[in-house]
Length: 551
Image (cartoon, rainbow, N blue to C red; front, side, top):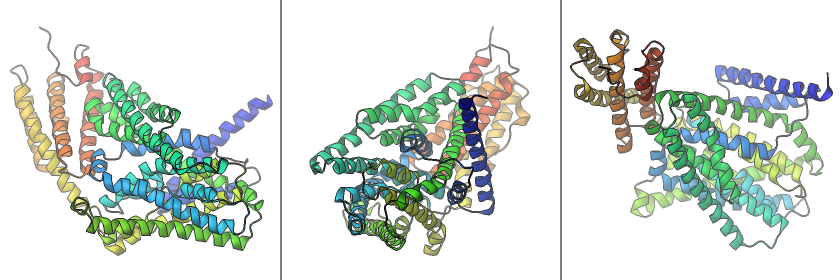
C-alpha cells in the first residue's frame, strides 16, 4: 500500500477511534455522575503517554475558526432572546466590565510573579495572559446551567456572560499581542480596535441574521433548511473577522435571533431536525476538544521544561495567578452588587442578593477558549511553554471548582427550578393554546367536514385544557379534513404560545417544552399522511395550509 494512502487510513482510524472513545467515556461518566470534560481530559492525558499515541497539537486556528463558532452558535440557539434583552445590562456588566477588570488584575499579577524569575517579561505579556484567562467558557457554563442544579436567573446570567465575553477577551488579547510586537502601541489604538470589533460584530450579526431568516422562509425541505443552519455560524464569523469585527459576537447574535424567530419561519420538521443535528454537532465538538486538550499535555510539559522555571517556583506562580483570577471575579461581582443594590432606581429594580453574587463569583469556569487562545501568543514570548502549561492547569482547576457550584447553591439555599411548578405552567400554557385552537376550529370548520371529526377535535382540545396532553389516534379516519383542521389548530396554538412568550408570562423552559410538543405532533402528523395521501393533498400538508377540495 502506498505510504501516503496508509497515513490517510491511519488518520481516519484515529479520528473514528477518538469519536468512539468520546462516546464511551461520556456515556460512562454520565452513568456514574462524573464530570465528562474532566474525565475526557484525564483520559487524554493518560493516552498521551502511551507509546503508540501520535503527537497531537491542537491548532488554535482550528479551534477559533472551526470549532468555537459552531459551539457558540449551538449554545446561542438555546439562549432566550427575551432573557438576554431583559438582563442585558447585567450580562454586559459581566461580559465586558468583568473581563476588562480581570485582564488588568491577572495581567499585572502575572507580570510581577513571572517577571521576578524570567527576564524579558513585560506588562504587555502579562496583560496578554490576563486576556487569555479572563473569559469564562460558554460550553462548560452551559453544561452546568443545563443540569437544573442552579437557579434560572443565575443560569441565564452565566450563559449570557459566557456567550458574549469571548469577544471582549480576544480583542484585548489581540491588542496585547500587538503591544508585545510593537511596545509603542497606545491606548487610543487599543480603544479604536475594541470599538471596531464590537460595532463590526454587531453589524454583521444583524445583517446575516436578517438575510438567513428571509432565505429560510422560502425553504420547506428540512434537509435544505438544516444545511443553511449548519453554515450559519461561518457565514456570520468570516465576514465579521474580515472587516476587523468580532466574529464571535456576530455568531452569538445570529444564533440568538435565529433561535428566537425559528417558530415564525421554520416548519416543525425543520425545527426538530435542527435541534437534533446541533445537539449532535455540539456533543462531538465540545467533548472531542476536551479529549484533544488532554492529549496535548505531554508536548506542553516538554515545552514548559525548556523555560527552566523550577517546580516550586512554577507551583507558586500558577497558584498566585489562579488566586488573582478568582479574587478579581469576587471583587468585581460584589462591587457590581453594591451598585445594583444602592445605585440608581433603574439598577435597583434588577438587583440580585448577596447569595446570588457569591454563586456568580464562584462559577467562573474556564475552558476551550483559554486553551486555544494561549497558543496565539508569539513564539518569542518569554516563558511561552510555562504559560501554556499554566493555562492548562488553571483550566483544570476551574473545572474542578465548577463541580462545587451545585453543592454551593444548595448550601446558600438559593431557589432551584421547581419541576412541579413547571408542570403547572405547562398545563396553564397548553390550556391557553387549546382555547385558541378551539376558536380556530369553530372559525375554519365547514359543512363539508365530517361532523363527528369536528366534534372529536373539539373534545380533544377541551380534554387537553383539562390535563395538558393526550394522543390523537382515535381521530384519524378522515385524513383530508383532519390534517387541514388539525394543522390550522396547531397554527393557532403556536401563535398563542408565542404571544405568551412575548408577554413574559411563562418560563422559557416551559415555552420550549410546549413548542417542542407541538413540533413533534405536527411532524408526526405530516409524516404519517404524506406517504398515503392523494397528490393534491400533499402540498397543503407540506405547507401547513388548508387543502382546497377539487370539484
